[in-house]
Image (tube, rainbow, N blue to C red):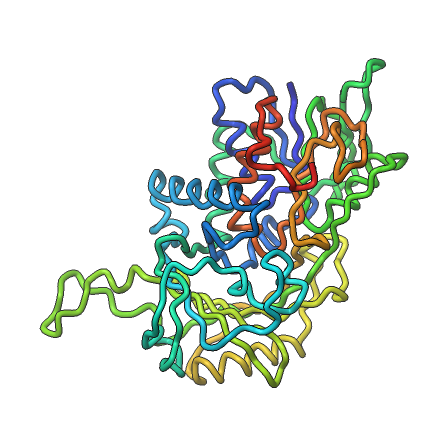
Length: 409
């Protein structure tokens, strides 16, 4: 059984990772990535904030599963050192705008803190890198929230996949598929976008995990399909900063002041509002490189490029983020990176994780052997590992209704 996964971001790579470590799976695994730069969209440019219980009921089990898998990966493979896996203290500077329904906060221009399941309460002084540290409200004590650098995690997963003989086709795009007379998927033709050369490889299982580009891929491969994947893109600009106040000094043992030697182990997530710019900034301190990630400025009209590496950063949006950073951090930070990525979103805020042979949202797709995993919005990193585990099980024919019920199946 040859499985082809379109999209080598967090979900596609996680699917290949779990499928390649399954003793029951027999067959080749192919990852297809259109961009000449790996992880050029949300998988490399997202915040990397993880939560276990900040989800609406249809997503609850998938969220819990993914958080636990993130923790397991970190414990087994040195996640703290290698991709900065660290408990994160969730805090709010003030009440967030647009309370929302807990599922579609992203499209409403609100903060993900509107969906938070609070595991902490009271006030604290806030992180040392925050200029305004008084009256910070604790939303999460770090027991069910964590922080990673998503680019480093994705690179780790990809390295593991390649070491297990997963085939990477990059830069390449799918052109067409064929089926046997009985209707079973048989082959897929790929085009190398640098050389224009085409190759045809066996394909009996096909996973569409191309993020915001997933509907385009589906239309290309199945032009006569009556099924339409209701996934659109939401662009988000971001800054990665270096502050002299983060990370705090690492201590091998308590000093004369009684400072806790583990203080450097705690990251912070700060959710607030910017009334002047009319958006909900989110700031995350990250390890292992000691960065602070600033985002929250989103647009549903910012154009989706042909491939992620062709991004054009809007300098006006970057100026707004820099002004927010100066207001919250002071002016003694260094800009390490500016970026924009495109999150795949759905109207109701729920991702589509489905077997298209069974249909999506009540429509019969009739596309046997084809699976889709996209539409996670801002929770692509947090839920991506769990989604990969679930989709790998679906490809193997395991029952996964417990985790995907209500998500477009």
